[in-house]
Length: 288
Ligand code: C5P
Image (cartoon, rainbow, N blue to C red):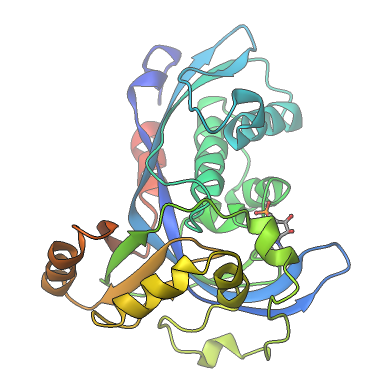
């Protein structure tokens, strides 16, 4: 069991995700969209440390230029859990940010999910994973998949999840350096919102169409040029609402070769897919 003295020594992972495909099947009365998507959890992402205190204060230790503390979803997640469980303790959060902002990789959502999972243990809240996922949904549609911590088929706003086994896969992430607002893509008049609802139990567990591409490409035409260029190395896809573009490889050697060839032209990162999020194992080791 972790003690207050050692809580700040563990780095808790907050992995990135890819949407291998993303279909939008309708607009909802609550302002969100219904979608069907295949989430792939990655072996790379942000990391967080939690320094528990008895003063009740919740804050962030380090500065992150683009994210003021008051707007940080990690701080919101900690406040939400503290209020929900009437916790007296507080926490200082240290965030090692690697996942670019507005990249379609779920960085903020994953950070917030890790906050909920970690503080549920460190504050001894005793909530189940399902309760944490429901709480997380108040902060964002991508939270539940990170709380459940498994690659999954998703429906609804993204919270109805069916875990899947994708096996060992390799990806090359290409970062175009554009921060895309999720909301701006979902609001765009050209967004394709009428995809046919598929039977996900019969749907291939492979990368496919992303209905956000047309809207994102209209806003940032430079993405089209990158997509065209990348076709020499495979079939490129955009993740989420962008801006990250990815290529999938079945073996590591091909991913490394593409990295070598592309790294002088683009900001790239080879990563692996994982079926189980590393944050779940951090929880177990933290508890031991
Ligand atoms: O839930 P999250 O904060 O990540 O969503 C950001 C915005 O993206 C929402 O305000 C909404 O406009 C849009 N969105 C949507 N349908 C979804 C997920 C997000 O319309 N399933």
